[in-house]
Image: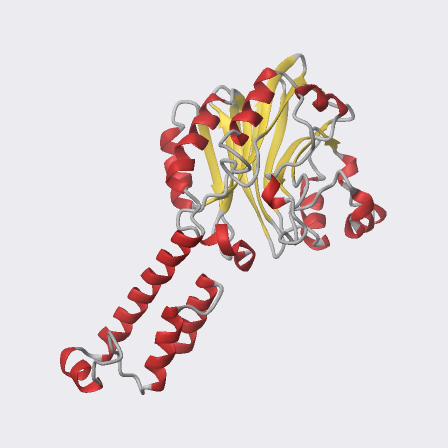
Length: 339
């Protein structure tokens, strides 16, 4: 039990902290809990039971660790969240795929977006966060389905657009793992009309640098079967320069081992046709607002992808956004440890 507690603290902090060292001293001293080194074991035994001391130790260590993480690598969630909600409300998108949504935030989004969007959500048991899909209230909902598996963390929502039935998929993938991408593509291959949005943690705009992406193509399990809505020459009309979907401080190879370049993507299948895409001022406004915080600090460590499509003569905006829901500041500093 004690060893598990130590591992948990090390997992949260990412390194040995004062709390962990005090816990180690506690074990070395034979179970005597002391608030400071001068407090005797006898005093502790008189004032508290072993069970109470252990509970108090865990609680205090957790508080110290969380406080240290928040102070050192603060994610500013309380400041970011209202602005993110405002972007979602003003986006004018009919469909938005979201990632890194913690369960209580999904519940809160349902309240804050009531009357505008229906919020659908799922979370893999092994993850801290889940994925969501926002469907505008003027769209006809049909059904919701989770995709669960060793490599899959995705959500499917089926809606009706005009006379057609579309399946919307939101996914969050670690990237560079063939199994999870292949599993996802196998799962969605059955749908004639599909919109797939997510954080893939892989830059598909540079496949020549991605060996595993090439292998997937050779195995005929390729995203090239789908229409890439984001990697479109017309997107240059937005005047936003590069294709990166992450802020400058996430593009440094010296400090960033994965997720550089453009890792957020929107794909579609429209029968045997290609969807017409447009990049208007609404698209540009959504992207700019998600980046406009100051310097290289965006509202999230991803921007808001937005594209306008034409489905049977009806134009609509589609969005993709990883909002980095990070209430306690854990993932902001040690995100890879929880992936």
